[in-house]
Figure 1 (cartoon, rainbow, N blue to C red):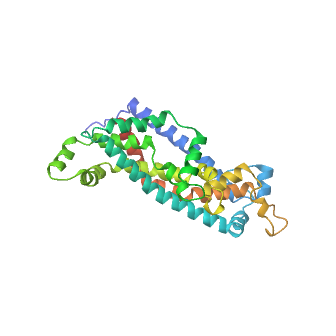
Figure 2: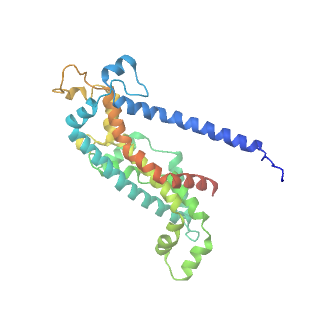
Figure 3: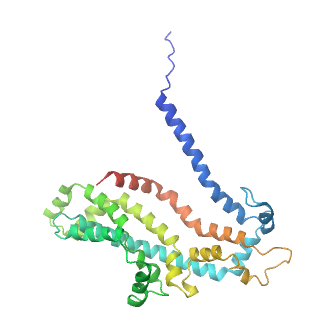
Amino acid sequence: MKSMIKPRIKSDDILIGCFYVLLGLFSLLCLLPILMVISGSFSTETEIAVHGFSLLPQGFSLDTYNYVLSRQMNTLASAYGVTIFVTLVGTVLSVTITTCFAYVVSVKDFQHANKLAFFAYFTMLFSGGMLPWYLVCTRYYHLQDTLWGLILPYCMNVFYMYLVRNYINGIPYELTESARIDGAGYFQTFVKVILPLSKAGIVTIVLFYALTYWNDFYLPLMLVTDDKYFSMQYILYKMNANIQYLATNSTGFGADHIALPTQTVKMAITCIAIGPIALVYPFVQKYFVKGVTVGALKG
């Protein structure tokens, strides 16, 4: 009979196992705030005021969602529409501008490529300040109380541009050179060669830009006074800054024994605001991880 040889457990395997256990525990800790927000949205205002927030709903109730959907339905529907439109249009426009600029500064036979790259990098180091930026947006470009005011200021992120440029520089020059020999112009080379080979980096900045537009409250705060251009995040910001924001619209809420929700309303709208991003993120996570890791190793 052959002797049974037990496999030896290497110390590296133990370390890797411990690392995954710690990483799993850390991931669970990161989920705790989200779970508490969801639990708080289904709790009653009285129970939260007495016992605070917990992982499980206290005095399970749908009154908060009924209040939000019945009393604030028009405001939330308008804000959701603005947020979705700005996120979709802004992401497409920003990714287009960023990838085009990244390709231009990566073309080796373009004599002004280094100048444009330095000009973009200079904006990362120095800025004119908030007041000049506000005057340029309102007086020269007339972006106040417009949807374009929520899109154009974020159309070019220099860090994302350099991330895409690292991908483009990692593409073998012989591929683009052979495309030029076959008669392809710069635009055809960009569309048929550069974009397909830079898919991971482009998907990464798509996620970055989408999160930027979806979570933005700064541009509505600075450039919007008309409530029809308010975004979801700006409404949430206003409620965090003034807890009585929704309390002013509490007339006719319903039963008198139910306290007007303030904390629970914030929790409910937070769940509504982060819902689409939380659903989309798992489908693009693999591109996000690949894009960040590969982009960091190149260039």
